Length: 478
Image (cartoon, rainbow, N blue to C red):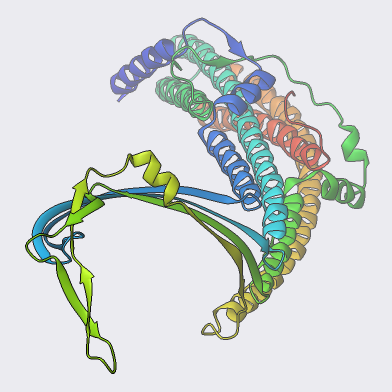
């Protein structure tokens, strides 16, 4: 069993060494700043803000006139009317047409104005969401950073315990050789040392995993040499903890983005209601269109008398019965006029006003208004709930910070007491008045109290940071 633990220790130690190559040690401020620039969730929120800006351009475009051009060229192949004879013949004709259409909303129930105002509110809401995402990432980075610091402290404690165990094992071996203690105590101490070696390996593994977690949170591509600055972080009293929870809550209502987002969503819902109501009002539009055309068919440019059939009887004179005749001509065909001349001659304009009055459209417009009213009520409830949640979170964070301080102070007292008990047990063991099992129990309690104190310390630091966070103090340093 001891050999297996030794092999595991060597393997994990080699992984840990390859992970933590000498290099830059990051501070909390550097970690937060790097995460704010590279975190994927933040980048997605930035894209949402860009989309909101594009929506504003769309809303502004509703005030501009629409302008569209069109062109068409067609071939008619088959049975068509001959323009010279009026008879249907198999022939091919070509035509070209072009046009230009413009329109503008003169009155649309103020929908365009409200859409523009809504788009501006959407930009504000998207920015608040981006700021909230940055706050959340900063908080997560701080938590991961402090987890690394705790794991470092815990590793230090476990290594100190292993050193003490090895020293006691050597002392036990001397006592066994001198016949002062039974040989079974030496076996117990060897087992204790093996357990301590495993605890060190576990602590190193936990430290490595916590470093990897923070490196992934920062989106680091090369994280093998990643490490954080392991300065001695002191327990400093925060001025914010001198404030009352009510004062912190009032400050949080001004600073926290949760409230700002809820308020922006409420304003957006109010604009949506106005937009839907605008659909119930008449809509007045102005329009203008220009068109022209050209033909590629031969045209009649003149005529010559028809010698074969010079005249045609078109009627008789009443009373005399004399025939009324008309001279017949044969049309003379020529090439079509120049295309641009035809475009100029055939151009036309059309403009006017169009009024649309909604009367009955399957209740769609009125149902849209009712849905907007429901959405508005939801937004009002969400805003109230956001204030309640913020108040609860502030009070909870304040109480947690107070409890964390009490836990840390109690942990320090426990460490001092366990250290005295362990020192006393060591003295008794050295003179043969205590067996190895009781000594190991005293040492285990002492080490556990050290780990609890380290955990309580960094838990208090994080809890205070959360309270400061609600008070509007950025998380960028400890």
